[in-house]
Image (cartoon, rainbow, N blue to C red; front, side, top):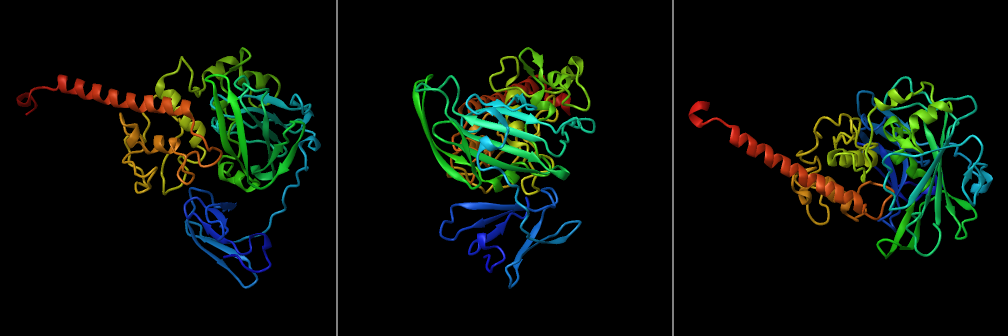
Length: 420
């Protein structure tokens, strides 16, 4: 428990961490259901082995890790980025009513968006004057110059609200600092939709709207993240999630988005149409031209792989990146490392069990509403019904493919005497 005057904001709270991911949280003993992220230790997920948390008489907190480079870390209070109190004061928008971005911002779209409880999203980025995104050293991860601004706006779905125009919910801002790390903030809109106020701490916001098709009411408690939540997903390995070649490689207004952004000087290395066409893509859930396998694995890549990658936590050892679409997913048929973890009352024997969605841990975690085991870990309360349909169909198809292969092998197998 944190005591003393060194950190009064967490005094009287328990401090605990995950020895695999390096994430540290605090917990109020009076409200044990709600833990609050404190920090992400700097030795990264793949090399993390948190071994102890201790304190001295002054209230200083110390953390140790054991790895190839063991170290002792002391908690310090970093200089918090000062964000304006209102979105209108940031200068990021020329007009808040229409959400017309200020000069220098470029809007962009992603192929497979992160599920955010069904809310619609718009996105913009702005580079410092004369700067470019460094896409010369890696075909998968780009480097962004310090001073780059990313904006993501959330609102109720346009075209699916029966009782009026879309309601503006929140606008998130992500700033790239020196060294490539990022800091973020959330602005929560007022009911009139005229401005948004800075929201640094977590908040639960009741949302309700009437759907047009199918006619129904949507009502749930939307979770607005706090500024400490940013490091959970926007970690040092993946500081910016949606701006990468896989997510941008698709047509917008009749032209490949990579080509469009190249033409206006966003990239250090330009993409012409042949170069863009040669790159891998992600397929949306409703893409009629994509295979069921590619749609399902694209969804897992977009929603899960920023944590579950080859450099992810050793305890899980799960790679959901769509690295090679031509090869079967390596995690299909594999047993979960945490096989004892129960989802809605029982455990699953496989991560993805061909032909059996109910024995597939990934599918059941995407479906559950239990906060401690639901995936993605942050940012969703409601399950993604469209994704669950695709995932279920995909898992069923894997069982049919396996049965067909087994039948073919049985038919083509030589007689026992011949085999001997």
